Image (cartoon, rainbow, N blue to C red; front, top):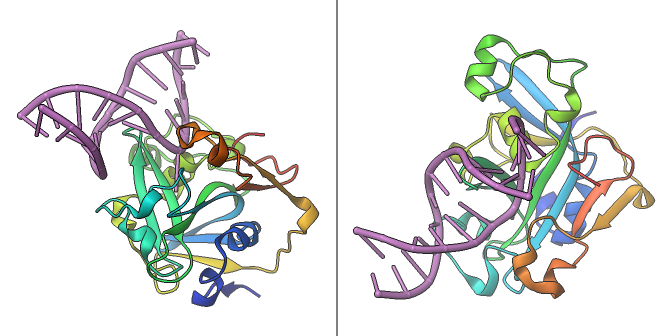
Length: 208
DNA sequence: GTACAGATTGAG
DNA sequence: TCAATCTGTACT
Protein backbone atom coordinates (compact mmCIF):
# COMPACT_ATOMS: atom_id res chain seq x y z
CA UNK A 1 0.00 0.00 0.00
CA UNK A 2 2.51 2.58 1.09
CA UNK A 3 5.36 2.95 -1.36
CA UNK A 4 8.41 5.01 -0.54
CA UNK A 5 9.11 7.62 -3.20
CA UNK A 6 12.23 6.73 -5.15
CA UNK A 7 14.77 8.86 -6.98
CA UNK A 8 12.87 8.78 -10.23
CA UNK A 9 9.96 10.64 -8.65
CA UNK A 10 12.13 13.65 -7.88
CA UNK A 11 14.20 13.73 -11.04
CA UNK A 12 11.48 15.25 -13.18
CA UNK A 13 10.05 18.61 -14.06
CA UNK A 14 9.90 20.63 -10.84
CA UNK A 15 6.50 22.21 -11.45
CA UNK A 16 5.03 18.77 -12.11
CA UNK A 17 6.53 17.25 -8.99
CA UNK A 18 5.42 20.23 -6.88
CA UNK A 19 1.84 19.35 -7.82
CA UNK A 20 2.25 15.60 -7.49
CA UNK A 21 3.63 16.04 -3.98
CA UNK A 22 0.14 17.08 -2.89
CA UNK A 23 -1.42 14.03 -1.25
CA UNK A 24 1.95 12.37 -0.57
CA UNK A 25 3.02 11.64 3.00
CA UNK A 26 6.07 12.78 4.93
CA UNK A 27 7.11 10.21 7.50
CA UNK A 28 9.48 11.18 10.27
CA UNK A 29 10.91 8.70 12.75
CA UNK A 30 11.48 10.25 16.15
CA UNK A 31 12.92 7.72 18.55
CA UNK A 32 10.81 4.64 17.96
CA UNK A 33 7.74 6.53 16.83
CA UNK A 34 6.56 7.75 13.46
CA UNK A 35 5.09 11.18 12.91
CA UNK A 36 3.24 11.44 9.62
CA UNK A 37 1.62 14.27 7.68
CA UNK A 38 0.04 14.56 4.27
CA UNK A 39 1.44 17.32 2.09
CA UNK A 40 -1.31 19.83 1.28
CA UNK A 41 0.68 22.87 0.10
CA UNK A 42 3.91 23.37 -1.87
CA UNK A 43 5.85 26.01 -3.76
CA UNK A 44 8.23 25.53 -6.68
CA UNK A 45 11.51 27.40 -7.09
CA UNK A 46 13.15 27.03 -10.44
CA UNK A 47 16.60 28.54 -10.59
CA UNK A 48 18.74 29.92 -12.01
CA UNK A 49 16.35 32.14 -13.97
CA UNK A 50 13.81 32.45 -11.12
CA UNK A 51 14.43 35.75 -9.33
CA UNK A 52 12.72 34.42 -6.23
CA UNK A 53 15.12 31.50 -6.01
CA UNK A 54 18.12 31.50 -3.72
CA UNK A 55 20.00 30.18 -6.74
CA UNK A 56 19.01 33.09 -8.98
CA UNK A 57 21.65 33.82 -11.58
CA UNK A 58 23.48 30.61 -10.72
CA UNK A 59 24.52 31.75 -7.28
CA UNK A 60 26.13 28.99 -5.20
CA UNK A 61 26.84 29.44 -1.51
CA UNK A 62 27.33 27.17 1.45
CA UNK A 63 23.72 27.89 2.36
CA UNK A 64 22.05 26.97 -0.93
CA UNK A 65 24.38 24.33 -2.40
CA UNK A 66 21.95 21.53 -1.42
CA UNK A 67 19.55 23.01 -3.98
CA UNK A 68 21.93 21.79 -6.69
CA UNK A 69 21.87 18.17 -5.54
CA UNK A 70 20.05 15.52 -7.53
CA UNK A 71 16.32 15.35 -6.76
CA UNK A 72 15.27 13.91 -3.42
CA UNK A 73 17.65 15.70 -1.06
CA UNK A 74 16.69 18.09 1.73
CA UNK A 75 17.54 21.76 1.38
CA UNK A 76 16.79 23.39 4.73
CA UNK A 77 17.61 26.87 5.98
CA UNK A 78 16.59 29.39 8.62
CA UNK A 79 14.54 32.51 7.92
CA UNK A 80 13.91 35.47 10.19
CA UNK A 81 16.27 33.93 12.69
CA UNK A 82 13.65 31.50 13.96
CA UNK A 83 11.90 29.46 11.30
CA UNK A 84 13.31 26.53 9.41
CA UNK A 85 12.10 25.99 5.85
CA UNK A 86 11.97 22.45 4.50
CA UNK A 87 12.70 22.15 0.78
CA UNK A 88 13.34 19.16 -1.44
CA UNK A 89 15.81 19.36 -4.32
CA UNK A 90 14.46 18.46 -7.74
CA UNK A 91 15.82 17.50 -11.12
CA UNK A 92 19.31 16.44 -12.09
CA UNK A 93 22.48 17.20 -10.15
CA UNK A 94 23.54 20.74 -10.96
CA UNK A 95 19.98 21.99 -11.52
CA UNK A 96 19.16 24.47 -8.74
CA UNK A 97 15.50 23.61 -8.43
CA UNK A 98 13.50 22.75 -5.35
CA UNK A 99 10.05 22.54 -3.82
CA UNK A 100 9.22 24.18 -0.51
CA UNK A 101 6.86 22.18 1.69
CA UNK A 102 4.48 24.77 3.10
CA UNK A 103 1.81 22.82 4.98
CA UNK A 104 0.90 19.34 6.21
CA UNK A 105 -2.26 17.68 7.37
CA UNK A 106 -1.13 15.83 10.51
CA UNK A 107 -2.14 12.17 10.58
CA UNK A 108 -3.30 12.12 14.18
CA UNK A 109 -6.72 12.62 15.65
CA UNK A 110 -5.83 14.75 18.57
CA UNK A 111 -2.69 15.98 20.17
CA UNK A 112 -1.89 17.33 23.60
CA UNK A 113 1.86 17.71 23.81
CA UNK A 114 3.55 16.37 26.91
CA UNK A 115 5.61 18.67 29.09
CA UNK A 116 8.74 17.15 27.58
CA UNK A 117 7.43 17.60 24.05
CA UNK A 118 6.61 21.23 24.82
CA UNK A 119 10.10 21.84 26.11
CA UNK A 120 11.78 20.24 23.13
CA UNK A 121 9.63 21.99 20.57
CA UNK A 122 8.96 25.29 22.33
CA UNK A 123 5.26 24.60 22.05
CA UNK A 124 2.57 26.50 23.96
CA UNK A 125 0.77 24.95 26.91
CA UNK A 126 -2.52 23.11 26.51
CA UNK A 127 -4.10 21.40 23.56
CA UNK A 128 -2.92 22.51 20.16
CA UNK A 129 -5.59 22.45 17.49
CA UNK A 130 -4.45 20.01 14.83
CA UNK A 131 -5.18 22.67 12.30
CA UNK A 132 -2.42 24.88 13.65
CA UNK A 133 0.24 22.22 14.05
CA UNK A 134 1.80 22.20 10.61
CA UNK A 135 -0.09 24.82 8.55
CA UNK A 136 2.97 26.84 7.64
CA UNK A 137 6.54 26.14 6.50
CA UNK A 138 8.11 27.09 9.82
CA UNK A 139 5.47 25.34 11.89
CA UNK A 140 5.72 22.02 10.10
CA UNK A 141 9.48 21.98 10.69
CA UNK A 142 8.87 22.48 14.39
CA UNK A 143 6.28 19.71 14.44
CA UNK A 144 8.54 17.29 12.53
CA UNK A 145 11.54 18.43 14.53
CA UNK A 146 13.76 19.04 11.56
CA UNK A 147 16.59 21.53 11.50
CA UNK A 148 20.05 22.11 10.05
CA UNK A 149 21.06 18.54 10.96
CA UNK A 150 18.88 17.40 8.05
CA UNK A 151 20.76 19.52 5.54
CA UNK A 152 21.46 17.45 2.42
CA UNK A 153 19.67 14.38 3.80
CA UNK A 154 18.72 11.87 1.08
CA UNK A 155 14.99 11.21 1.31
CA UNK A 156 15.37 7.98 -0.64
CA UNK A 157 17.90 6.58 1.84
CA UNK A 158 17.28 8.22 5.22
CA UNK A 159 16.05 6.14 8.14
CA UNK A 160 14.61 9.18 9.95
CA UNK A 161 12.66 10.95 7.22
CA UNK A 162 11.19 9.90 3.89
CA UNK A 163 8.15 10.33 1.65
CA UNK A 164 5.45 7.80 0.81
CA UNK A 165 2.71 7.34 -1.73
CA UNK A 166 -0.26 5.89 0.10
CA UNK A 167 -2.58 5.82 -2.86
CA UNK A 168 -4.17 9.23 -2.33
CA UNK A 169 -4.92 10.78 -5.71
CA UNK A 170 -5.42 14.51 -5.96
CA UNK A 171 -7.25 15.38 -9.16
CA UNK A 172 -6.07 18.28 -11.32
CA UNK A 173 -9.22 20.24 -10.58
CA UNK A 174 -8.60 19.87 -6.85
CA UNK A 175 -5.28 21.68 -7.16
CA UNK A 176 -5.30 25.43 -6.72
CA UNK A 177 -2.34 27.42 -7.99
CA UNK A 178 -1.51 30.93 -6.84
CA UNK A 179 1.47 33.29 -6.53
CA UNK A 180 4.14 32.29 -4.04
CA UNK A 181 4.17 33.81 -0.57
CA UNK A 182 6.59 36.40 0.74
CA UNK A 183 8.73 36.92 -2.35
CA UNK A 184 7.81 40.42 -3.48
CA UNK A 185 11.52 41.18 -3.68
CA UNK A 186 11.62 39.05 -6.85
CA UNK A 187 9.82 41.77 -8.82
CA UNK A 188 6.35 41.64 -10.38
CA UNK A 189 7.12 39.14 -13.14
CA UNK A 190 8.48 36.40 -10.90
CA UNK A 191 6.36 37.22 -7.87
CA UNK A 192 3.25 36.62 -9.98
CA UNK A 193 4.20 33.17 -11.23
CA UNK A 194 1.46 30.80 -10.00
CA UNK A 195 3.90 28.32 -8.55
CA UNK A 196 2.27 27.82 -5.19
CA UNK A 197 0.02 24.76 -5.16
CA UNK A 198 -2.44 23.59 -2.57
CA UNK A 199 -5.37 21.21 -2.20
CA UNK A 200 -8.66 22.98 -2.77
CA UNK A 201 -10.77 23.43 0.37
CA UNK A 202 -8.23 21.67 2.54
CA UNK A 203 -8.39 23.30 6.01
CA UNK A 204 -4.71 22.66 6.72
CA UNK A 205 -3.18 25.05 4.16
CA UNK A 206 -1.25 28.00 5.53
CA UNK A 207 -3.57 30.63 4.12
CA UNK A 208 -6.01 31.17 1.27
C1' DG B 1 34.41 43.72 10.89
C1' DT B 2 29.93 45.59 10.18
C1' DA B 3 25.44 46.27 8.23
C1' DC B 4 21.24 44.58 6.56
C1' DA B 5 17.20 41.99 5.17
C1' DG B 6 14.59 37.76 4.93
C1' DA B 7 10.54 31.64 0.93
C1' DT B 8 7.51 33.44 9.07
C1' DT B 9 5.13 33.45 13.21
C1' DG B 10 2.37 34.78 17.14
C1' DA B 11 1.09 38.32 20.07
C1' DG B 12 -1.34 42.86 20.59
C1' DT C 1 0.53 46.06 12.91
C1' DC C 2 4.93 44.71 14.54
C1' DA C 3 8.86 42.66 17.03
C1' DA C 4 11.48 38.45 17.54
C1' DT C 5 16.05 36.62 16.39
C1' DC C 6 20.13 35.03 13.71
C1' DT C 7 22.52 33.72 9.70
C1' DG C 8 24.06 34.38 5.10
C1' DT C 9 25.74 37.69 2.21
C1' DA C 10 27.79 41.89 0.59
C1' DC C 11 30.64 45.38 1.21
C1' DT C 12 34.24 48.25 3.95
